[in-house]
Length: 345
Image 1 (cartoon, rainbow, N blue to C red):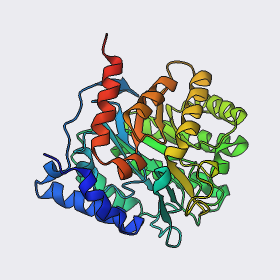
Image 2 (cartoon, rainbow, N blue to C red):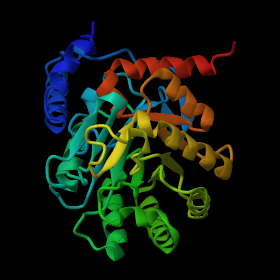
Image 3 (cartoon, rainbow, N blue to C red):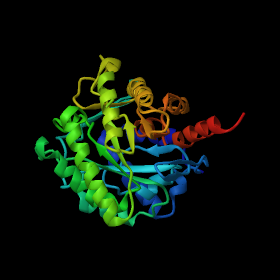
Image 4 (tube, helix red, strand yellow):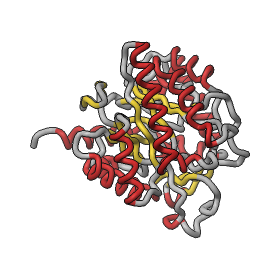
């Protein structure tokens, strides 16, 4: 019987958010390794779906960012997820931005972070990935180093793609974090064309060399205007990108204006980004047509929010900030709600 998260949350919320994050990951890993994952684990809801040539046991996934180095893949899988995404990893290890860099806004069920792709680099990341049991589809999320000039961004993404390709069920290209200077410019115009052209070419070479075609997805921001969304959708299809993850965190602050920490720099996640994310999903679905894979993420704090994402056009959804506020039970609640959607009445 899992421990009620309501008993644990006050302790975690008494700590600095980043310290609580690290403690939680270490604790989950330890519990799993010692056979005590029943203290937090939930049964996996059976609601299978086929997408991207992969079999997902249900449609609830873990979003990238929670486990940047892939250290707790199996421990997190025990929460009942249908798939796991880890990263963002950069070619070289980097410390990220100065601390403090993560802030809770409990009144809004939100977080602001400006972590800045802090991670241990590709070698450490792949060491952890190789050691995982891989019971679920695993997405590996790649980015560029902060010290790499923007005009050389493709070099970092190509290096990341080459390194993770053999180990990924899909690869997510993160061009939408607000916490690496200039990164979001890669979602627009010539920069996007150059990046997608280069990555599509790299993927074809890897597919031929390794005898398998690993799906590529691009993770986009919620702050794009409709004309930008249309142009981005067209570029994804033109370059043979297999799917899109919508969305990352927002730089908008309208929904949290006046709250403590609301003016901190970084990306806002949680309940305030729900409507923006869902709107982007709907616009992407309208432009991409019915068959194009979309993973919806952003502001899922209850089962109805996951249903809303699917109704807007997402095929799968991902959680992150909702776990911080609601705990592991959110996974099964959302998965059950989506399973009820698919059952004939």
